[in-house]
Every structure is written in structure tokens, then in C-alpha cells.
Length: 525
Image (cartoon, rainbow, N blue to C red):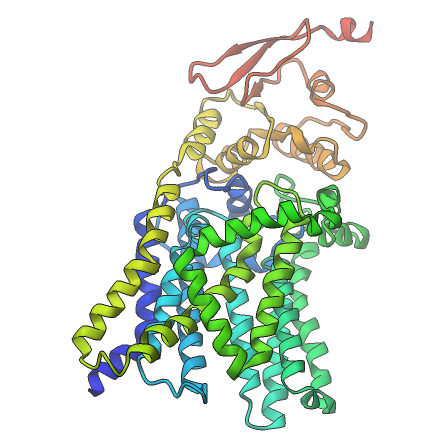
């Protein structure tokens, strides 16, 4: 019996390891732009060179991802894929332990060691959810954010169990510091942090009347110091230097993500049709059996821990509204806080339905094991089928594309790309996989940004010894016309150029070289 209990206590770790192995078996062994991973080349290049990425900068990700240098693999993108998988698997393992502890400490349930099975089932459900699985096998920031959301929720429950006022203060400071650090992984963690703080206030607001709780403010500010990484590294790597946040106004611009301001429409957060579509997505991700278990779990918490049930429901609704108000191709991972709450509730609900409801009928451990296996099949197998179908579409075509374009480019080429997926694949090849110091990659989508044109001038001076002032350049053609005539100009796509410009497809069939352009006299006329 003691051995059985020991095995059950290791169930959270076992669940996390199983999820990690699943990710490892289905993971592309290089850079991919599939599954929403178009930013992978930018992130991988920034981690490799210790550069900067698009707003809000993700300094926590950039710093923690440096750990991949310890992984002895040739492909740097593959290492970062593994980092994403470790974060997702860690989130599931921590969720399993958190759910089991919740059940065991619930005075209404008086759960035994089999609560670990319920926690493990919740972990398997979260880990096999397509929205988590697809992000766990690519270079992206979302699984670290998911891990941080679970950490914040676990810290809040830990603080709630504080035996003394002093212990509550210490744990609250830990939570505040983790909240500050979490914002450096993704701003979605701010929703989870605010929800956790509100939960603690509702549970017992008198605990916050102690002067010591004011220490959460310096604790939070201490966590926010991670954002100092952005100005400290600004300008160090001109090719990977989004926003160049060396000045206060540029740093604020990056932190506020002002470049994406036109993607936010708060009125859309209350658009019933858009909200309904996101609700359908959430239900599809969890599955009908998971939704039923989550509902049962919420009803149990309504009796045993009503503030947690209410705050959890509020978080799901607010998360749906915030996600609905943002327009982007990769908004679905913003539903991670809602997913985490739903699977927490589902684990509690499964325990209530299966264990509590049948404990008097199924006493033999073998039959109980069969029952658990059936529950796994009903809840998790459909998720594995759906997630597996999505993940298997991922290829390393982006890796091969960037490598081919850069390897075949003539010496001293300037490579123009139109779109993040192509541009970041080329950048990754220039800086990481191929490493050519004579190539200048250009992302045409960001040519309108003043700081980007200034960085391009620096890159041309450092790599090609070409002194050009690009501050008044308005488009790609104007930049091309200012380049010296002997500069090879390559396009990673088939450009639609005006009369006088002529391109030929290169032997690799993936890139196009500019072979004719109007003379400078013609342009002047």
C-alpha cells in the first residue's frame, strides 16, 4: 500500500514526462513557420544573438531561453522547440500537483491519494489540448506564458493556505514578484495575476490590512526589472533590434506595443458573434466530456470554495472578451488562462464524478485502474486525435527555405523579403544556421518604421561598408535605387516591379535576382 501511495504521489511528474515525450515525438527538428510559428525565426535569432524582438519585447522569454545552449543539438531552432515543450510539460505537471493538493485540502471531499490521479488527468487534458500542443513544438513564447499562469495560480492558492500573517505576507511578495516577471513572458499573465490577487482579497480582505502587505508593491517592481534587459541590449544587434529602445520614449512605445494599436477594438470584446466563435473554440479545445467535468468541478467549488469558483468564471469571461477585442492571426493562445482554469475545474469534477460517485461500488484497485483508463480514453483520446492531426502538418520548410536562399546568395547580397515568415526565416539563416556576415536581410513590412531604417543603415555600414542615409526612404524601390550598382539584390519572393526593372529566378527556384534596373539618369528624369 505504501508503494502504491508513493507511485500516486509521483503522478504529476509522470504526467509531465509523458506529455513531454509526446511533444518530443511530434516535434519538427528545426525551424517551422507552421502552426502559427511565423515569428520563430525572429525569436530564435534574438535568443542566439541576445537581440530584441517585437513588442512588448518578451525579456523573460529571451533570458530563460538562453538555457538552450546547454542542449547538445546542432539545430538551434530545434533546441528552442524543446524549450517550448519543457515549458508546456512543466505547466501540466504543476497543474497536476495543484489540482491534487486542492482536492486533498478540501474539507468537503476529504480526498485520499487517488486525488493525484485526478490531477494527472487534468494535466493530460491540458497538455493534449491542440492549442497547447501546437505551441509546444515550435519556437514561440506562449508555452512559457502558460507555465507562468499556472505558477501564479499555484502561488495564490499557496498564499491562501498561509498559517500566519507573516507567512501570508512573504507568499504575497513571491506572488507579486512572479507577476512582474510573468509580464516579461506575455501580457496574458497580467490577467492571471490580477485574478489571483482579487481572489485573495475576496477570500479574506482583512489579511491585506496588515502594513506588511504593502511589500507586494516593491516585490512587483522587482519582478518588472526584467524589462531593463530591453534598453541594456538595445542597439547591440542592429539586425535584431526591434524598436531600438535606448531612449525612454522608445522603450515606452515598445512596452505599450503602440505599433499594434490598430489591432485593438474594445467594442469587439462585446460582439456576441465574435464571442460565440471563441466560446466554440474553447469547447472544441476542451471537448464535451471535459466541459461537463469542468461544470461539475465548478459546482463543487461553489460549495467548498465559492470565491475560487466565482473568480475562475470571471477570468474565463474576461479572457474571452479581451481575446475578442484583439485582431491578429495568433490570438487563440491568448485563451490559455481560460484553458488552465477550465482544466483545473475539470480535474476536480472528474474526481467528484468518478471517485466520489463510485468509490462504494468499485473498491478493487484493478477495477479502479480500469475505470481511470476509460476516463483517460473518453477525455484525452479525442484531444490526442485532434491535436495530432494539427501537429503533423508542421514541417521545417521555413528552415530549408531560409538556408537555401542565403547559401545561394552572391557575396554581399541584400535580400528583400515581404512578410514576417519569409523575412524571419532568412534572418535566422543569416545569423544562425548559415551565418553569413556579408548578407543584409531586409523585411519590407517594417521599412516604414524610422528606427528600422536607421538600423538598416548601420547594418549596411557594418556588413557592406556602404554609407547610406535611409531616413527618407518610403519603399523598397527607393532603397534599391540608392544601393551601389554592383550590390546583388535578391528577393525571397517573386516581386511585381515596374517597367525598367527585371528579375530572373535563381537556380534554387526559391529566390529572384534583380538583373536590370533603370539607370540613375533615368530615375532622375
